[in-house]
Length: 247
Image 1 (cartoon, helix red, strand yellow):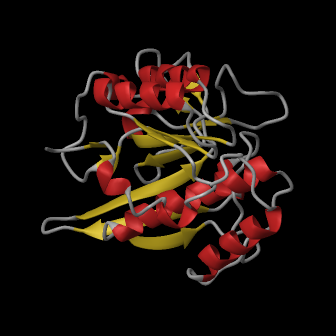
Image 2: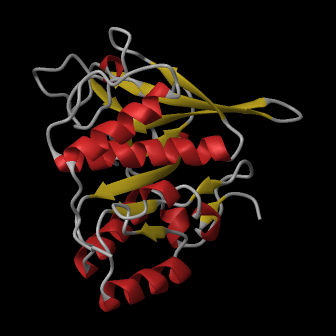
Image 3: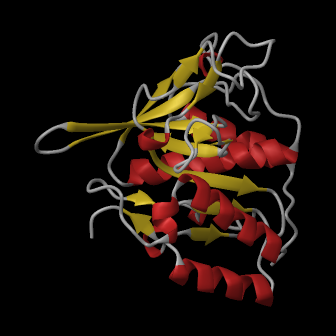
């Protein structure tokens, strides 16, 4: 089996088109870089995971009738599409949004440090548009971010072969915006979410595989690799991964 972190762009286009067609929409425009296609594919895997967990999936924020992925940190969130997931319990409906490339406020320093995670599951309507924020660039009317208390979980996507440095850097992101996972705590009662996860296109070598095993036991995080070779299974073996939520 190949371990090279590469996939034909046309294959990605077909996967994404087929995914969106199941929700009666189309992509606004195809990306031009393989890394962007991979990030879009991982976004779709996350959506499919929640759908398999019984959530109803709704497409939101279509642009000219088409789905526009936010594959870059720049741009207003209102100009991009996203997925809303909903599950009705005995007492109330549970609703979340799956968002793409929006800064998340730090857990310890929420007014000073912001991390742009690739994919985030957040409470509905959680995005803040601050017209007077100190980090607002001149070319933008406001600074958009997600308050830390609104974050449920997040995913970092890398079109690389995993390296020790990549895995260790990911734990730094988790420590900054979801340190509860570094302590093995469960910040939510219901429902269970996937723990913060690093999603990587390439395969492990012996060293990185051992690091991932140790970190997955030491911390409440997931290191998911080889996603170029097993995309169809990416949301099927999730039951084996760490989650956050009630035990």
